[in-house]
Amino acid sequence: MREHFESCPPCAAALASARRIEAALVSWPQASAPADLASAVLARVREERWTSEQRIDRIFNLAIAFALVVVVGSVAALANLGGVIAAAEWVWGVGAATSAQLARQAAPVVATYVGAAGVLMSAMIMWWWAEQRLSL
Amino acid sequence: MHSDDVDDADLVGRCRKGDESAFGDLVETYQHLVYGLIYRLAPDRTQAGDLAQDVFLRIHRGLPYFRGEARLSTWIYRIVQHVCFESRGRRRATVSLDQPLPDGSRRPEPGRADGAYADVELRDRLEKAMAKLPDQYRFLIAAHYLRGVQYEALAESLNLPLGTIKTHLYRAKRRLRELLDQ
Image (cartoon, rainbow over all chains, first blue to last red; front, top):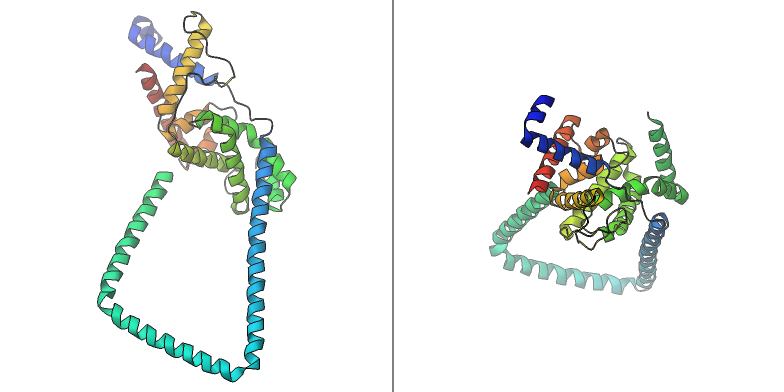
């Protein structure tokens, strides 16, 4: 092999080039992280945790407000049970009539909507699959 | 089990319990490896610090789900790879001639005819050729020539057999040589 390289200028040049590239890669300078990287990361972690806690607090406050409304509403309803039952029956009647009317109107085009939803769903699944493949 | 694995398992356990100083230790331990790798892979090196922060944030978010089946470093390489590829997708590579070299030195005047200039010139061309390599090849070369990264860890992080990694690395170097010869 060595004899061949000595007698073949193209191969010798290729070998020299490969060695130079290898040497350049081996001596590629190692970049050191900035001195403040760790503190910056910890600051972002704290910020993220704070944001997440704020979100949880907001959800908790909303839940409490909702519970309060339910309790107050229930107490008020108990004070006037007959009126509440009449109102509930009226709401139920209106809801049932509206649903029946909507169902009658939608019946002829249900197949089209189901087909379109199927096509859209297939496209979404294919897109998701392609994204997964590309991100590997 | 390797002693580093034991240390990592302990570190991960403490992080999971919400020990902030443990996560600080984790960042201190891996920051140079993560930053060094990103510095070689990121299309825009001025973003390397931000990308390194993103990597550690993802590590922090993912630690509760890290089951310890792979080594911590392997998992981190995988995150670095994803973050860099995503960033590359957002912005194509640009290697500016005005950009300082990785070791902080300035590019020498082209008229200078000394050995150092030839080395710097080769490194410059090498970096441009690296930027043109396919993502996986670039990751392999950047990681392989970074101190402390083993073939086994690369194989694990890329979910490929060891032999395939060696073959890919050979092909990556061959492609790099072709790009340099163009």
